[in-house]
Picture (cartoon, rainbow, N blue to C red):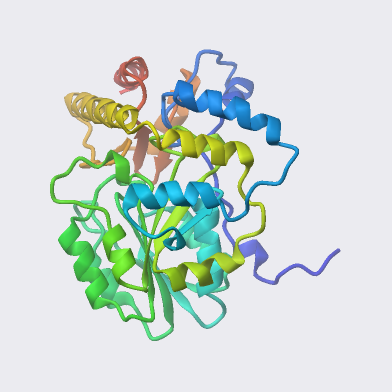
Length: 356
């Protein structure tokens, strides 16, 4: 037997929402809606699908590992220098690369205890110690608590805004206060995977902070509003020197020609993105109103999902929903429900009403 890492068995394994095919096999259900993984319910734009088909002919060639053209497009979108952009295979592998670059034995990482599970897993990959800060009773991250939790051995702090799985957000003034109160030798990673869905007037992206402060970076993804989850493209924006150091640990050719072409084309359709944001906000409101009408509380979400609960036996309720072809994601005594199409939202609420 090979001599594996001694701590390997203690490292958590990411558990995604059940795939549709698995639910079909296990439950014998054929008509299924998946509302568990915060995916976009709409397929890629027609123009993006055409770009994918064209790029597929270049699949026998390695991709541009620096993603030169897409980096320029992203830089133009956010009014930054292309050298301040790092493109990778989705924001999750990017977070792992950051953890490896910043961590190691004898270091620690700070994040909220009800936040994206990959912060915990990536910290374990790096051999660092996780420092989890309790979330507030309003399901919002405690920025002052996060800053206070930083220790001399802390090298990285993660802030998911809007937060997954609660959907709540931190206003821009609070984000700046956090940045001001954390030592400059600690990297602050503002994870903005759901940024495009935000409609709250008190919020702006942390990208301007990231180009001003060399210890702040912002991560984004094409997996959500752009509908490219299966093509794995994400990016980071930060100071040139910081980006240069962080990207050392990304494996070569991590992206694909098809993914890069799809992302470039997707960026050309801001009007279609705006339409999706409006549709998501309407669906989010429908879910929240429907849940409250059933007597179920839900958080104040600014993402493409809502967190319902607390509910009794949340895991058992989620299991019952699987039997009627509705896939959702339990988290303790809460259940996260992705905003689907109007028909999917209605089906979920009808199924929930029957079960309750």
